[in-house]
Amino acid sequence: MLSQLTGALEAPPGAIALQALVQGLLTAVISYFIYGLAIGILGASSGAAFAASCPAMTALMGIPILGEWPSPIDWIAIAIISVGVYVISGGPLPRRNDRVALSQSSSG
Image (cartoon, rainbow, N blue to C red):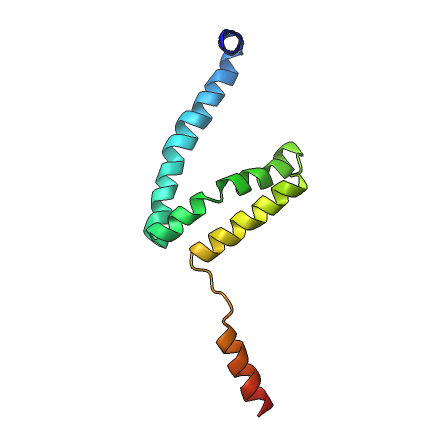
């Protein structure tokens, strides 16, 4: 723990200022403002569902920004998270009755 603190104190002031700006202003203030807008537009349930997509979005942004590709298990997790967010946020799902009715009307 002490070595981590010593390392942080040895960082250039510009790097510390950038970290404070990104985590203090962008992450804390702007993300809460945008999250509030999303809740207002989408509703509480759908807006909250999108918060669950943060790990998946972070992993996907790591590809172009850091050049890090997710492992196969990460891709599976990204897919499960994405499907879950889609379903919980009210995305339309195909209905079996609609497909059966459509096939009966076109064959008769």
